Image (cartoon, rainbow, N blue to C red; front, side, top):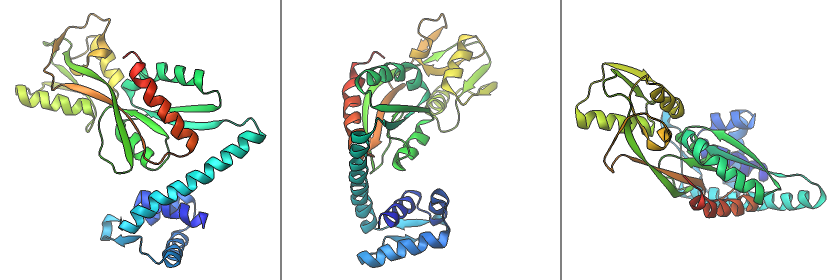
Length: 277
C-alpha cells in the first residue's frame, strides 16, 4: 500500500504518468497499474485525462493527496524517532534560497539555526523563486526564501522583509542591464521602460541579480536593482516610487515532510523578523 501511495503522490505532483515513472525509476505500465489498483481498492477515480495537457486530479485526488501526506509524514516521524533513539544520525533539511536572500538573509539565518539545532544537517540550494516553489510542491525542499508571492493551495507563505528598487548607474551609459525573462527584476524593468517610454540602445542580459549589481558597481551599465545591493558603494542612483519594491517571503508546504521539519519551520518564522536586512 505504501508503494502505491508514493506512486500516487508522484503522479499527482507531476500530473504525468511518464514523469512519475521516470522519477521512481519504474515503467509507465507499472505506474498505471498501481494507480488503477489503488482506485479500485478505494472505490474512487483520481485522475481525468485532458489530451496532451496531462492528467487533471479529481477532488478525491486532492483530498487523498493531503491525507496521504499526513500518513507518510507520520510514518517518517516514527522512523526518525527510532533512528535518533538508537544512533547519532542527523535529520536532513533542504532549503531553497533566491540570490538576494542567499547574500543578505541566509548567512544570519543559518548561523541562528546551527546554534539552536545541533541534530539537523542543512543543505542550502540557491535557485530562482519559481524553481524553489516547484521543488517545495514536490517535497524536494523543506522550505524556501523567495522574492515574489505565489498562489498555491499546497504552499504557505509569510512575508518577512522588503527592499526598495532604484534606478542605479550612470544614466548616460547606453547599456541597460536586464534580468532574465520572468524574473521580478525584469518585470520591474519592463514596467519602468513602459512608464518612461524608454527604448534601450544597447542591452546586456544577465540571469543573476548579484552579478547585475556587481556590473553596475563597476560602471558597466545602468539597471533597476535592489537598493540593498549597492549600499556602501558610490554608485549613483535615483529613488523610485513606492510601487517599485520587492517583498521577501518564507514559503513551505502546508503539510511539512516531518514533525521535526514542521517544528523547525515554526522556529524560522520566529527568527526571520529578528534578522537585520
